[in-house]
Length: 396
Image (cartoon, rainbow, N blue to C red; front, side):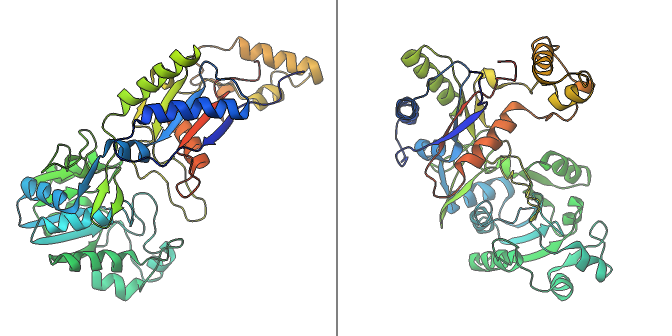
């Protein structure tokens, strides 16, 4: 019988991971036990994806708000600090904000509007247009924003993020001000030392701030990029990709991810003789069409992965072949023609018409999005995802 199943992704349940656990051993045992229980074979180029959350937890890569405050104070002094473009998130930024505010005497926080970098809306464009406000030219104070936009809440969380961030700033005791603009250099009207809090646009933001005369500029990737008073840290990403752990601490992106994925790959090979691929994933890179939130609040989808996951897909579009090259064929003749074409496709189809409509993204971004959707971020209890058949195609 011809093969009738292509790619399959399974969420695998593991024990609850705690600090100090041998995560490689837990993942390998989970993978082997799942294959036995579900009666499938482990094969070359199968993929094991592990959520970064359990990797950071096993590492114990945590930091407190006081440790964040200490690093901010060391890098900026304890005077006035400008914050530009933080995202709107209780999980991703709120605890960081508390630590940052504890490190200085005065904070001026500048929010982008009508939405943050990943699409969380403060206000809709229709409201701004109704009041004659152009978010690309107009700078608003907190009072002007309230007078014009009222007290708006997030579509899904029900949180008024301006009020929420205001309450966090007030609780720290720091003198504070909130303004709204989409031009990073505007913050220099209020502060000469600036912390860029955006994620994917941070290098441009830091460049513009320096070009416009900022005195000291750092990004969230520069905060806790080394241990501070015994804290966790991440050399490459600092606070970027961190998540709220407790009311007074965050969990950072894992530090030793590359060592872990290669260790798991070798242990599975020793146990099965098969060479699987392994990756650590965070947020998937996809956008909600209703709430318009782009999911990727991490600096990268996959902070660590084995070498076989480098690159992008090299695929032809079957429907294009069927409608063009082989439109005159039907049934078995059409199947055989498309199978043969796939088997003989070029090694690099970039720019080819027959590849139009395929997904031009990195393999790790595609796989991380798949794994994130399978595992979810709630109570499914499946922090490991096992993917079979991803590198297969219609010809095999």
